[in-house]
Length: 253
Image (cartoon, rainbow, N blue to C red; front, top):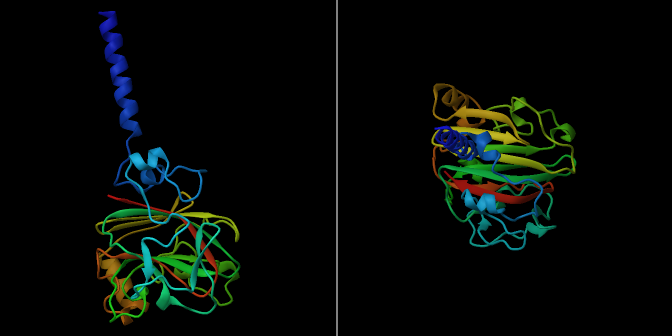
């Protein structure tokens, strides 16, 4: 009897351990915990591969990416130190790079590093069509910017970590210029969560009354198709200042 009780206890403990080790695909912070820290850039760990993560950038080639409304990879971008970065000055948002594939429900993880006064962004749910000139005409943006050294006054929905022109960040866990930040974007149905360096900075539900009010009363009122698409491409923005992107990984959920 004692052996039977011991066996049952061990089974319960083992089941609990296995259960605790599982990732909740509805929990952005649980998904963030799947990312293996301190490994070689642009690689997947065995754990990440097991959990369904895929690399969107190998650090060496432009495979999987092209310029917006282009068939080629634009020459205002280059690969430097195993990172995507810009090699031109002045705004080139019409030459943002986008993924070759569309995504609907996903979690995206990447690292970015800023130079002083740099401005960029990660845009998602983008429609690629010649009726649009820029990705931001249709897709929401996870703002990437050194707002502390930006020359002009910014609104709170323009600073690092914001959902640009919609939701300001509820926390400010960004790292200093020259250090790598880890960005995670969770999109599932209408639920969107933005995480920066392990901290939730924005969380909202698309198509709610609040979302529609913000969308229709601000900058996006001039762009009738902004936020309209539930499936679309993912873009890295070239705002004419230097930013590095690496470790770009995605998991469909």
